Amino acid sequence: MTPALAPGAPDVSPDHPPAPGTDLSPIAAAVEEADAAGFVAVGDRFDDDVRYLSRFVGPDRAYAVVVTPDRAALTAPALFDEQAEREFVRGAPDDGIAREIRTEKQRGPAGVRAAAAVDDLAPAAADSTVLTPASIPHDAALYLENAGYELRSTTAVADARERKTEAELACLRRVQAVTCRGMARAEAVLAAAEPDGDDLLFEGDPLTTERLRREVDAEMARHGVRSAENTVVGAGSTAADLHYTGSDHVAPGETVLLDISPRGPHGYYGDLTRTFAVASEGGWERRAFVAVEQAHETALEHVEAGVTAGTVHEEAAAELTAHGFRIDSDEVGLTHGVGHGVGVSLHEGPSLRVETPLEPGNVITIEPGVYDPEIGGVRIEDLVAVTENGYERLATYPVRFTPTSPE
Image (cartoon, rainbow, N blue to C red; front, top):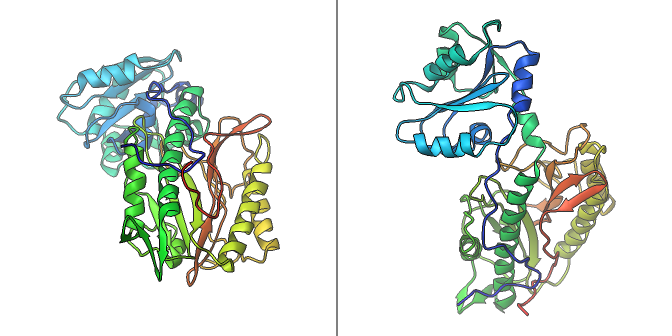
């Protein structure tokens, strides 16, 4: 039997979109501009830069991506040759970069293999500089230096990741739609819960944040999207904990905050937050909800290309201040930035606290919130893509204080 969902959940395509390829030309251009021998990134399947550059989902042992002005190589781990060929080479876009898989010395250290690849691929006239992300593993850096290369960090990968392609947006749209389905399941459970003294009873048992989390995660799993073990559900005082993943009792009248940020099969995250209250009598909870809802709308009104990211934060913060909530405390009121970039990392650029203009293709959260550790927390969050004339909400879910029953 299909679980009940609250009204407003978007339809979800039965199939995932194709895996996006990565245009390596901005990395190659950075190498050329620096007159460097090449660019090297080293990591395993959990390194988001390496995953973005290669689209290869390999094992939990290190491998390397090497990029020169017109060539790129992936040092495939042992037993992964065919997968590396399929994902790194055959899945690549037409960006003018010739890709290859290197299979020599597959049991050797990734840094040694990376240095050998630079030796082979780099133009003869290039100097001994190698560009790397700032987070390159220490041992890989030492191997490159021992091979005679001088390392210089570059932001080229982080900069490229901030501007999503249409193929990346397709991945983000689907995972966000599935995220909305998870939220709709949680809202349906809350709507069905019945107050009984200090408890909310669901199917005869006291409702907990862990039960809500399981319902959310199960609904998303039905559509092939994993929770990434980070579904935040807080109630009452734990709703003021920004990353609460424990089990807490859910009582009538208190805020229940759900921040759902799963990861799709191609590595892209969704991110959606809603706050509900069952049998609320108003008071702080209702006042906080009204303030956050207005701050959320105000922030969205300022999202468009050319507007500085920090402006969006400042406008939302000003709205919360106008409603009497603090923005100068680490514990009470607005205690975090109003948004951040999302892609193959849950938190990436751009931050909404910097004075950098937003660009078309940026994907950001809009998530104002207010918190009181003694009472609870309220946050409303959507995921949007910046366009020339405003923004696109990547999936839509209603904003409601009182949970609504399935139709």
